[in-house]
Amino acid sequence: MNNFEMDLVIETAMKAARRAGVIQKERSLKEFQVTRKQTRSDLVTEVDVQCEAAIIATIREVFPDHTALAEEKGEYAAEDASRRWIIDPLDGTVNYAHGFPMYCSSVALEADGAVVAGAVYDPVRDEMFHAALGRGAWLNGQPIHASTTPRLEDSLLATGFPYTIKTEAVNNLAQFAAFAMKAQAIRRPGAAALDLCYVACGRLDGFWEFHLKPWDMAAGALIVEEAGGMVAGKEGAPFSVYNHAVVASNGVIHGQMIQILADVALGSKHA
Image (cartoon, rainbow, N blue to C red):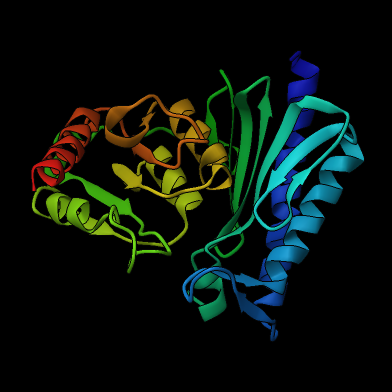
């Protein structure tokens, strides 16, 4: 991908994410319909659908031949399958439905199997995070970097739990308990894309979560890496947006986080 195309991709990703964020902010002041998906905790609102349509329309104005993978409607077919946008129109839907101000839109481009650009927009704080492969990570036009906290005991972490927490065997409760005994503190904000961005800009030192979808991680994971942090899959496996898990850190405490996850996994196998 040449520089001109990459510039256009970044501009489009940010424009699409911001357009969705404007809708989120405007609709948060009005009543909207909320429905459940597979569990009582897995919600979708009409705002999710409206934001997704706005993002797709924004992308197709510039790249009509690109495909897309989005949370609400799934695959959007097009001519060029080597370019696929990965979209979460409203990450943090449960938060949004309750008026809890922690949600965002996430837009990333995958080219030939690798995520090369991404944008995450938080309309509540008017914060636009973005990154492109080899170009660094940015917040509202200023470069950002992961923290340098060296020890887990001094670290602020974040995590999340699956919608199937009541029935899922690997529901992250054992991992949460293990980290709670080692880290300085843990937060559960409820929007994975923002959690990753917070690792990228140093507000968090680490984040882990299981049972995620590609649109939860695609933009945020790239932003972490471009900010100098590290991302991995479950228990340190190579990261892929399609492997449902992420461990992200400032890089310094990465090995400590991986060790705790491995210890919990080993303990559960011997239980």
